[in-house]
Image 1 (cartoon, rainbow, N blue to C red):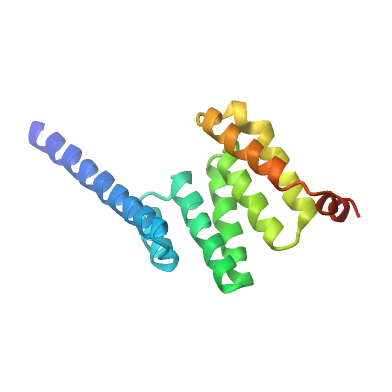
Image 2: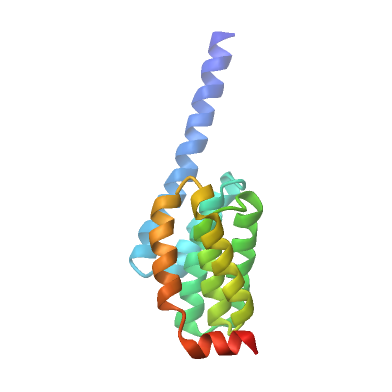
Length: 155
C-alpha cells in the first residue's frame, strides 16, 4: 500500500513538473520574441493541465503579439478564444480582462474593448493578484483613453 501511494505521489509530481517545464519554456520563448514557439509550448502545458487559467492567458498574450506583428486577424480570434477559456476558468482575473480589452481594441471593437477593461477594473480587488493587476490595468486604462477612442465607442 505504501509503495502504491509513493508511486502515485511521484507520478503526480512528474506530471506537475512537466506542465511547469512547458509553461516556463513558453515564457522564455515569449520573452525572446519567439511567439509561435511560445504558443506551442503553452499548448503543451494546457494539454497537461487544461484547468489552469494562467496557461491560457499566456497563450493569449503570445497570440496577441503574433497578430500584431503579422497583422493576422485570425490570431486575434484565436487569442480571444484562449482568453474566453481563461475567463471560464477564472472569471474575475483582471489580467485576462485586460488582454481581452487589448485584443478587442486592436480589432477596432472599441465598445467591447471598453467593457472588457471595465470588467477588469471591477474585478481587481476580488482577485488574488489584485495589487499588481490594479496598477497595470489602471495605467493601461489611462493610457488607452484618448478622446476619439471614446467618441468612436459611443457612436
